[in-house]
Amino acid sequence: MYRLWLIFAQTATILLAIFFVVSTLRPELLPWQPRGDIVTIKEASPAASMEMPDSFNIAAERAMPSVVNIFTSKEVNAPSHPLLNDPMFQRFFGERFESKKRRTSSLGSGVIVSADGYILTNHHVVAAADEVEIALVDGRKAKASIIGSDPETDLAVLKIDIEDLPVITFAQSEAAKVGDIVLAVGNPFGVGQSVTMGIIGALGRSQVGINTFEDFIQTDAAINPGNSGGALTDIAGNLIGINTAIYSRTGGSLGIGFAIPIHVVKQIMEQILHSGSVIRGWLGVSMQDMTQELAESFGLKTTTGALISSVLREGPADRAGIKPGDILIAVEGDAVQNSSDLLNLVAALSPGDTVAVTVIRDGVEKKLNVRAGVRPKQM
Image (cartoon, rainbow, N blue to C red):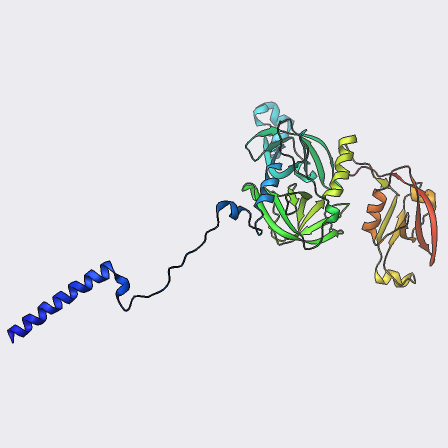
């Protein structure tokens, strides 16, 4: 019995030794090891990865150097106790108790549009600033001067004196279509330059209530505080708009942002550079949109046109014979859809030009010639 046990123990030891050697040196010979072909994978080269069709890296690299951060500051009076303004109090305690001043700062974005140092941004970014400083992506900084601004479209032109500036390329914003992919470049919340992506949700968006003159590109590319004045580009990195505002209940992006199309921006910029301000046509009327109820009361079948609610005495419209209650439906043959449309058509007129307008009065169309005036400056 002992001999049998010894033979078994020796045999088990030999088998365990063989198993150890095989599992270490040739594990594929064991029956429970998975058998399969060795898969050869093909990895993309770094150059091929950079050319991926679903990447916007090239567009971002083209646009980002031309987008700058704008830092503004203003000196304001710090809150003080009413006694500090009392002459008797100041007489006894001197100037050391006079109201102190402090500086407030804010930030926005801008776009370099000329090698001469001209930068586009929003009027509201620099409107209340005493000092404006520009910071480029490459780390260079410079003080900027305000060449001019237009509160009614919320655009401003700045200038800096720096050489070798990266200039953005303008696109044809009139060719933009709903559904086109766009990139928004700016400095949201001051976190640093960022790029977001979305599509064009609507074109020619007006009556938003942001500016006097509105012809916005609407996009769902994330635009947040600090993005104002930044670039909206196409997928080639070309500028199609200046980011201006968002619709938000929280202060952050909800997917509805607005940009001023670049064909409008160019017109405003050229006037600012030429004269320091924007000169627009003016009729001297107040107007309102036609509603279904108003159309029915006038016996009309459509709600197109703008109802003239008042006429400024001795203004251009008054001298041309336009009266309150007239429904203005065309300017120089261009149909007027609503009051916003009329405002834009009239603003595009050159002051001094005589144009034909079509009105409906007592149910009858009537053509009148009116000489456009100069729109008063809006503060």
